[in-house]
Image (cartoon, rainbow, N blue to C red; front, side, top):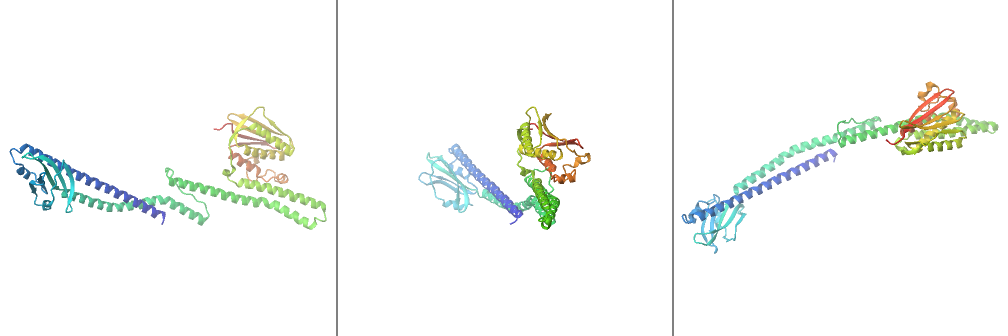
Length: 451
């Protein structure tokens, strides 16, 4: 069964059950109140008769007085202790009451009884008769009129329930349509995506805060992630095919050269092996960088915390200096702290230090300090510098300032792109300043304390 039909069925059944329960409650409450009212009226009538008998028994015989109080549809009688009757008067419309057996009852009794499928109110009241004996004054009156009213009410409630089922059913269909509409729109969008292979999003009501709008927002967010992953995948394939073409061609050519002349010329054999090894290393590094760039930032496991920036920079510089045998000076006279991800900051420093190593021969200097509410790390080299017209593009993917020099030194044009992506992920602002033949300065700004 479709969800729309389920919602329609369940809401209709629920509303109808509630309507039946409500009408049944009204019916039973009204029936109880009407019956109780008849009993109270009968008791009040008997009490009035008893009072009149006590007041007029010396002037009017009680038997004659009872004639004035005979119920229209009922019976009045006086029962002695020995079950004999001093008086009994029955209305012509209720002959069935004549055969009702006599009972002498102690105390005041009032109840509803059924005789031949008709309901009556029976009231028994002790009375001191004119001869001084204690007798029961018993009055039985029909409540058929009340029962008729209750039956009419039952018929009306049944008809109302049946008639109310129509708007209940229609309203449940409207409700199910309203609920299903966003889901239907989502399904249609998914089918369009499947057919057209193009990512699409749902149009949502900006003012609504319902769960359906939340579901739509979640769907759109999922589509954004899928599209981003798809674009990254396409970009990865495109970049990999573009960048791997040259090293693969070099490896192929040198391998072919080795196959043809390698055994004859040892110098050519050594040159070929060096070239193949160099290109293989460059392909491995480039592939790792491409995979890193293809990942979502959510997969980076970023952990922002308060760390000692001065200590981290000194450790990184010392490791880099020992690895590449390059002089790296850290200029910082005091302990500087900052709020960032330690591992990602190290990775960022390695990228910029590696660039400084490749394009300069002199000492690399790192400055650490604080300005206003920000901590900064400044990496300065005295290398070849970057032309002014190239500065806006240095963070673009595969962009090289000097193609020949970058190829020769193993650059793939991905280092600074990855650095920019890492910086954005850990909320670091990068400022780049460079002059040709004078050097390049990279400054990293980030929060000193958690906001």
